[in-house]
Image (cartoon, rainbow, N blue to C red; front, side):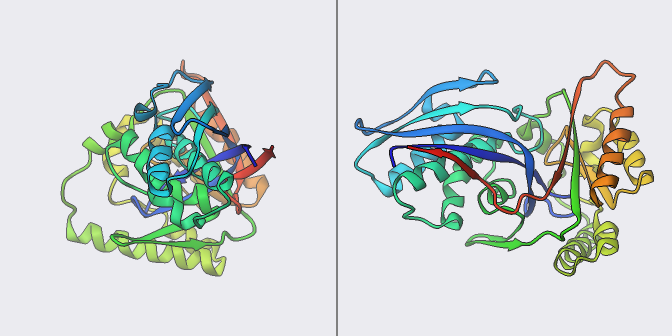
Length: 309
Protein backbone atom coordinates (compact mmCIF):
# COMPACT_ATOMS: atom_id res chain seq x y z
CA UNK A 1 0.00 0.00 0.00
CA UNK A 2 1.43 3.38 -1.07
CA UNK A 3 -1.59 5.65 -0.64
CA UNK A 4 -4.61 5.74 1.64
CA UNK A 5 -7.73 7.91 1.80
CA UNK A 6 -9.60 8.10 5.09
CA UNK A 7 -12.59 9.69 6.81
CA UNK A 8 -11.57 11.13 10.18
CA UNK A 9 -14.63 11.93 12.30
CA UNK A 10 -15.60 14.81 14.53
CA UNK A 11 -15.99 14.32 18.27
CA UNK A 12 -17.66 15.72 21.37
CA UNK A 13 -15.31 16.09 24.32
CA UNK A 14 -15.84 16.69 28.04
CA UNK A 15 -19.50 15.56 27.74
CA UNK A 16 -20.38 17.90 30.62
CA UNK A 17 -18.94 16.05 33.59
CA UNK A 18 -15.72 14.64 32.07
CA UNK A 19 -13.46 17.65 31.57
CA UNK A 20 -10.39 16.57 29.56
CA UNK A 21 -11.11 12.86 30.21
CA UNK A 22 -14.33 11.91 28.35
CA UNK A 23 -15.13 11.99 24.66
CA UNK A 24 -17.41 10.42 22.06
CA UNK A 25 -17.14 9.88 18.32
CA UNK A 26 -19.62 11.28 15.79
CA UNK A 27 -20.62 9.47 12.61
CA UNK A 28 -21.98 12.10 10.23
CA UNK A 29 -19.29 14.79 10.01
CA UNK A 30 -15.53 14.58 9.58
CA UNK A 31 -12.47 15.41 7.49
CA UNK A 32 -11.18 13.46 4.52
CA UNK A 33 -7.44 12.97 4.21
CA UNK A 34 -5.10 11.38 1.69
CA UNK A 35 -1.63 10.26 2.78
CA UNK A 36 0.94 8.72 0.43
CA UNK A 37 4.46 7.40 0.74
CA UNK A 38 7.33 9.29 -0.89
CA UNK A 39 10.94 8.36 -1.54
CA UNK A 40 12.20 11.55 0.08
CA UNK A 41 12.39 11.13 3.85
CA UNK A 42 10.35 14.11 4.96
CA UNK A 43 6.74 15.02 5.75
CA UNK A 44 5.05 17.59 3.52
CA UNK A 45 1.52 18.94 3.30
CA UNK A 46 0.69 19.24 -0.39
CA UNK A 47 -2.99 20.19 -0.43
CA UNK A 48 -5.54 21.76 1.92
CA UNK A 49 -9.16 22.41 0.98
CA UNK A 50 -12.08 23.77 2.97
CA UNK A 51 -10.30 26.18 5.30
CA UNK A 52 -7.17 28.33 5.29
CA UNK A 53 -4.61 26.39 7.32
CA UNK A 54 -0.79 26.51 7.33
CA UNK A 55 1.13 24.32 4.91
CA UNK A 56 4.29 24.49 7.04
CA UNK A 57 4.59 21.04 8.59
CA UNK A 58 5.57 22.23 12.06
CA UNK A 59 2.76 24.80 12.14
CA UNK A 60 -0.01 22.37 11.17
CA UNK A 61 -1.52 19.92 13.68
CA UNK A 62 -1.49 17.09 11.14
CA UNK A 63 2.12 17.81 10.30
CA UNK A 64 3.24 17.95 13.93
CA UNK A 65 1.49 14.66 14.71
CA UNK A 66 3.01 13.04 11.63
CA UNK A 67 6.51 14.25 12.49
CA UNK A 68 6.27 12.87 16.02
CA UNK A 69 5.26 9.43 14.70
CA UNK A 70 7.88 9.41 11.94
CA UNK A 71 10.61 10.39 14.41
CA UNK A 72 9.55 7.43 16.56
CA UNK A 73 9.19 4.80 13.82
CA UNK A 74 12.03 6.01 11.55
CA UNK A 75 10.58 4.52 8.33
CA UNK A 76 12.63 4.28 5.14
CA UNK A 77 10.33 6.72 3.35
CA UNK A 78 8.56 10.05 3.68
CA UNK A 79 4.92 11.11 3.43
CA UNK A 80 2.72 13.61 1.59
CA UNK A 81 -0.51 14.72 3.27
CA UNK A 82 -3.68 16.11 1.71
CA UNK A 83 -6.26 17.58 4.10
CA UNK A 84 -9.82 18.06 2.89
CA UNK A 85 -11.18 19.99 5.85
CA UNK A 86 -14.89 19.58 6.56
CA UNK A 87 -14.75 20.39 10.29
CA UNK A 88 -14.33 24.12 10.85
CA UNK A 89 -11.35 24.99 13.08
CA UNK A 90 -12.50 26.34 16.43
CA UNK A 91 -15.90 24.65 16.11
CA UNK A 92 -15.73 22.66 19.36
CA UNK A 93 -16.20 19.29 17.65
CA UNK A 94 -12.59 18.20 17.41
CA UNK A 95 -11.29 19.80 14.23
CA UNK A 96 -7.63 19.59 15.23
CA UNK A 97 -8.10 16.08 16.65
CA UNK A 98 -9.53 14.81 13.36
CA UNK A 99 -6.50 16.07 11.42
CA UNK A 100 -3.91 14.89 13.94
CA UNK A 101 -5.49 11.48 14.51
CA UNK A 102 -6.21 10.90 10.84
CA UNK A 103 -2.59 11.52 9.90
CA UNK A 104 -1.05 9.13 12.41
CA UNK A 105 -3.67 6.49 11.61
CA UNK A 106 -2.94 6.73 7.89
CA UNK A 107 0.84 6.60 8.30
CA UNK A 108 0.53 3.61 10.61
CA UNK A 109 -1.62 1.80 8.02
CA UNK A 110 0.86 2.55 5.22
CA UNK A 111 3.67 1.10 7.33
CA UNK A 112 1.80 -2.14 8.05
CA UNK A 113 0.32 -1.25 11.46
CA UNK A 114 3.43 -1.37 13.66
CA UNK A 115 1.48 0.32 16.45
CA UNK A 116 -1.95 -0.37 17.96
CA UNK A 117 -4.64 2.30 17.83
CA UNK A 118 -4.10 3.05 21.52
CA UNK A 119 -0.38 3.41 20.93
CA UNK A 120 -1.10 6.10 18.32
CA UNK A 121 -2.87 8.37 20.82
CA UNK A 122 0.26 10.10 22.25
CA UNK A 123 1.41 11.06 18.74
CA UNK A 124 -1.99 12.54 17.86
CA UNK A 125 -1.86 14.45 21.15
CA UNK A 126 1.18 16.34 19.85
CA UNK A 127 -1.09 17.95 17.26
CA UNK A 128 -3.61 18.85 19.94
CA UNK A 129 -0.85 20.48 21.96
CA UNK A 130 -0.08 22.79 19.05
CA UNK A 131 -3.75 23.78 18.69
CA UNK A 132 -4.75 24.23 22.34
CA UNK A 133 -1.45 24.63 24.18
CA UNK A 134 -2.36 21.57 26.25
CA UNK A 135 -1.72 17.83 25.90
CA UNK A 136 -5.22 16.34 26.10
CA UNK A 137 -6.62 13.15 24.59
CA UNK A 138 -10.38 13.46 25.06
CA UNK A 139 -10.87 14.18 21.34
CA UNK A 140 -8.11 12.13 19.70
CA UNK A 141 -8.92 8.97 21.68
CA UNK A 142 -12.52 8.60 20.40
CA UNK A 143 -11.38 9.48 16.85
CA UNK A 144 -8.93 6.59 16.90
CA UNK A 145 -10.92 4.08 18.98
CA UNK A 146 -14.55 5.02 18.25
CA UNK A 147 -17.41 4.99 20.77
CA UNK A 148 -16.90 6.75 24.13
CA UNK A 149 -13.46 6.89 25.69
CA UNK A 150 -12.31 7.60 29.22
CA UNK A 151 -8.81 8.88 29.95
CA UNK A 152 -8.25 7.30 33.34
CA UNK A 153 -4.73 8.68 33.59
CA UNK A 154 -2.43 10.91 31.55
CA UNK A 155 0.79 9.86 33.28
CA UNK A 156 1.00 7.08 32.38
CA UNK A 157 -1.57 7.33 29.61
CA UNK A 158 -4.43 4.90 30.29
CA UNK A 159 -7.40 4.99 27.90
CA UNK A 160 -10.55 2.91 28.39
CA UNK A 161 -13.13 2.32 25.66
CA UNK A 162 -16.83 2.42 26.56
CA UNK A 163 -19.51 1.05 24.24
CA UNK A 164 -22.51 3.28 23.63
CA UNK A 165 -26.06 2.17 24.41
CA UNK A 166 -27.83 1.10 21.23
CA UNK A 167 -30.42 3.91 21.12
CA UNK A 168 -28.15 6.77 22.17
CA UNK A 169 -28.03 9.68 19.70
CA UNK A 170 -26.15 12.96 19.66
CA UNK A 171 -27.45 16.24 18.28
CA UNK A 172 -24.97 19.08 17.83
CA UNK A 173 -25.51 22.68 16.78
CA UNK A 174 -22.47 24.58 15.59
CA UNK A 175 -23.05 28.35 15.60
CA UNK A 176 -20.69 29.91 13.05
CA UNK A 177 -18.64 31.83 15.57
CA UNK A 178 -15.14 30.90 16.70
CA UNK A 179 -14.08 30.00 20.22
CA UNK A 180 -10.43 28.98 20.30
CA UNK A 181 -9.62 26.19 22.73
CA UNK A 182 -6.57 28.06 23.99
CA UNK A 183 -8.72 31.13 24.74
CA UNK A 184 -11.52 29.09 26.33
CA UNK A 185 -8.99 27.57 28.72
CA UNK A 186 -7.95 31.02 29.91
CA UNK A 187 -11.39 31.71 31.42
CA UNK A 188 -11.25 28.61 33.64
CA UNK A 189 -10.28 28.93 37.31
CA UNK A 190 -6.91 27.63 38.45
CA UNK A 191 -8.52 25.72 41.35
CA UNK A 192 -11.92 24.09 41.94
CA UNK A 193 -13.93 24.18 45.15
CA UNK A 194 -13.99 20.82 46.94
CA UNK A 195 -17.81 20.60 46.87
CA UNK A 196 -17.81 21.12 43.10
CA UNK A 197 -15.10 18.49 42.67
CA UNK A 198 -17.14 15.99 44.67
CA UNK A 199 -20.26 16.73 42.59
CA UNK A 200 -18.32 16.38 39.33
CA UNK A 201 -16.78 13.09 40.43
CA UNK A 202 -20.20 11.70 41.27
CA UNK A 203 -21.67 12.81 37.96
CA UNK A 204 -18.82 11.31 35.96
CA UNK A 205 -19.15 8.00 37.79
CA UNK A 206 -22.89 8.07 37.18
CA UNK A 207 -22.47 8.79 33.47
CA UNK A 208 -20.00 5.95 32.97
CA UNK A 209 -22.23 3.56 34.91
CA UNK A 210 -25.22 4.66 32.86
CA UNK A 211 -23.35 4.03 29.61
CA UNK A 212 -22.26 0.54 30.66
CA UNK A 213 -25.75 -0.43 31.85
CA UNK A 214 -27.76 1.44 29.15
CA UNK A 215 -29.50 3.35 31.94
CA UNK A 216 -30.70 6.40 30.03
CA UNK A 217 -32.22 8.05 33.08
CA UNK A 218 -28.91 7.81 34.94
CA UNK A 219 -27.08 9.21 31.92
CA UNK A 220 -29.39 12.21 31.96
CA UNK A 221 -29.06 12.80 35.71
CA UNK A 222 -25.28 12.77 35.38
CA UNK A 223 -24.87 15.31 32.54
CA UNK A 224 -23.96 18.33 34.67
CA UNK A 225 -20.74 20.31 34.54
CA UNK A 226 -19.29 21.99 37.62
CA UNK A 227 -15.87 22.72 36.08
CA UNK A 228 -16.11 24.50 32.73
CA UNK A 229 -19.68 25.30 31.71
CA UNK A 230 -20.29 27.98 34.40
CA UNK A 231 -17.29 29.93 33.06
CA UNK A 232 -17.59 29.24 29.33
CA UNK A 233 -21.35 29.60 28.82
CA UNK A 234 -21.06 33.36 28.31
CA UNK A 235 -18.69 32.79 25.36
CA UNK A 236 -21.41 30.98 23.38
CA UNK A 237 -24.38 32.86 21.86
CA UNK A 238 -27.78 31.65 23.14
CA UNK A 239 -26.22 28.82 25.14
CA UNK A 240 -28.70 28.86 28.04
CA UNK A 241 -31.63 29.23 25.66
CA UNK A 242 -30.48 26.25 23.59
CA UNK A 243 -29.85 24.07 26.62
CA UNK A 244 -33.28 24.79 28.08
CA UNK A 245 -34.97 24.12 24.73
CA UNK A 246 -33.16 20.78 24.39
CA UNK A 247 -34.21 19.62 27.85
CA UNK A 248 -37.81 20.69 27.22
CA UNK A 249 -37.76 18.71 23.95
CA UNK A 250 -36.77 15.50 25.74
CA UNK A 251 -32.97 15.53 25.73
CA UNK A 252 -31.27 13.44 28.39
CA UNK A 253 -28.90 16.34 28.88
CA UNK A 254 -27.15 19.15 27.04
CA UNK A 255 -23.89 21.02 27.35
CA UNK A 256 -20.89 22.59 25.66
CA UNK A 257 -19.10 20.44 23.12
CA UNK A 258 -15.41 20.67 23.93
CA UNK A 259 -14.58 24.32 24.50
CA UNK A 260 -17.46 25.51 22.30
CA UNK A 261 -19.12 27.15 20.48
CA UNK A 262 -20.88 23.92 19.52
CA UNK A 263 -23.59 22.69 21.88
CA UNK A 264 -24.47 19.01 22.15
CA UNK A 265 -27.46 17.08 23.45
CA UNK A 266 -27.77 13.35 24.10
CA UNK A 267 -31.10 11.63 23.57
CA UNK A 268 -32.71 8.22 23.42
CA UNK A 269 -33.85 7.47 19.89
CA UNK A 270 -33.55 9.14 16.50
CA UNK A 271 -36.96 10.82 16.63
CA UNK A 272 -36.08 12.70 19.80
CA UNK A 273 -32.69 13.62 18.33
CA UNK A 274 -34.40 15.14 15.28
CA UNK A 275 -36.83 17.06 17.49
CA UNK A 276 -33.90 18.46 19.43
CA UNK A 277 -32.24 19.53 16.18
CA UNK A 278 -35.38 21.46 15.30
CA UNK A 279 -35.57 23.34 18.61
CA UNK A 280 -31.85 24.08 18.44
CA UNK A 281 -32.42 25.66 15.02
CA UNK A 282 -35.30 27.74 16.33
CA UNK A 283 -32.98 29.32 18.88
CA UNK A 284 -30.88 30.82 16.06
CA UNK A 285 -33.40 31.37 13.26
CA UNK A 286 -34.07 34.97 14.29
CA UNK A 287 -30.40 35.87 14.69
CA UNK A 288 -27.68 36.87 12.24
CA UNK A 289 -25.63 33.82 13.21
CA UNK A 290 -25.41 30.97 10.72
CA UNK A 291 -25.28 27.44 12.10
CA UNK A 292 -24.96 23.76 11.22
CA UNK A 293 -26.91 20.89 12.79
CA UNK A 294 -25.48 17.38 13.07
CA UNK A 295 -27.59 14.40 14.17
CA UNK A 296 -25.62 11.22 14.71
CA UNK A 297 -25.52 7.84 16.32
CA UNK A 298 -22.32 7.11 18.19
CA UNK A 299 -19.60 6.10 15.72
CA UNK A 300 -18.37 2.76 17.04
CA UNK A 301 -15.45 2.40 14.62
CA UNK A 302 -13.71 5.77 14.60
CA UNK A 303 -11.64 6.51 11.47
CA UNK A 304 -12.84 4.80 8.28
CA UNK A 305 -10.65 3.75 5.32
CA UNK A 306 -12.22 4.99 2.08
CA UNK A 307 -9.63 3.92 -0.53
CA UNK A 308 -6.20 2.32 -0.74
CA UNK A 309 -3.69 2.04 -3.56
